[in-house]
Length: 386
Ligand code: CUA
Image (cartoon, rainbow, N blue to C red; front, side, top):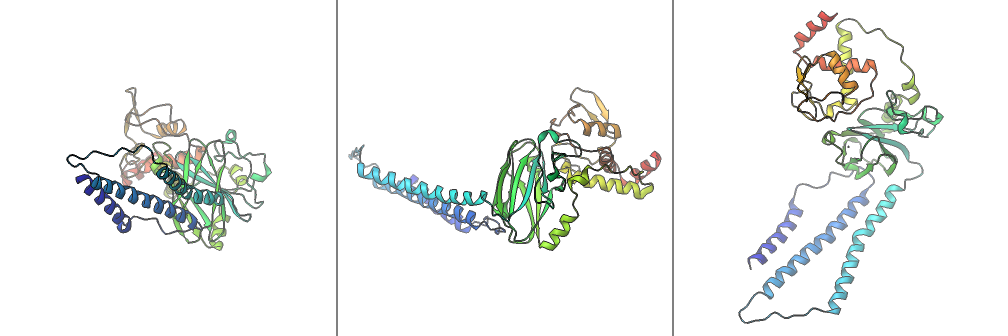
């Protein structure tokens, strides 16, 4: 009797919770209403079965409960009932699977006029690439990945020269235009997921996965990594900005092409004075964002996957082998260049090797240094160095 009442309460509670709960999907911002419909179908079918099966159990608990002197009836075979159950289950499973297969087929078959966007996943950041004026993405290969070529583009492929590279966690898209998303990974499984678009797909090392969608509402949407990909996974975030076509074109025109990133910048003498130092720190701050450092290092004193950068400069770190080292410019430079060479006590040796040229490295170190001591002291130190 108690079990029957408990089950009944669970059923009523579950149905009420579904109708009253404040957590539901975010407003749809793409063409994929079909995704929502498929989910609704699944929810309705599983909901009906959940209620029906539990109510049936409640009924049998009451109807066939123990009574003094009454024996249970034994009926191991019932052909008619079996046929009904097999038929009902088959129809239910088909209704669960078939709509999803149809939507998935539509999801990976893109319209001919879709613009291409490459999404590149790597621990623990997102990069993006557009095909450029020729409309073709250049060939890529893992063996081309090196400093100055984080996307691994084939330098000899003419189609790749005008490719537009976004080496940051934010990409823009024009409103109302279908986008074919082509996805690669440099290391492990990731999953690019933008909840309001109802669109997501694994990025798999060694292959290109694809899906398409049309953004239908302007806004700035957060993109998540939805595949547990290592300690930095929760911080592997990005943004997709949907805007009108003119704004998008203006933004795109300001991004560098592959050919442009390959031209060695002429050696500019470092700027003098406070302004130069400030610009360098600012460049370092931007790099920390774009290279994904902020996924593991905070600047507010809380340790995350890696040590916080607040007060790091000038500190003495203890290594796993018991030796100590003072965090100075040389320490930071060699650590960022080869993160696996030394292991700091208290932190897992998971820092990825980043592609950075000398100038970028100097800027990043300057930024970390700027967080190391109070501003006044930092300024005097910088003056003392000059
Ligand atoms: Cu990438 Cu989780």
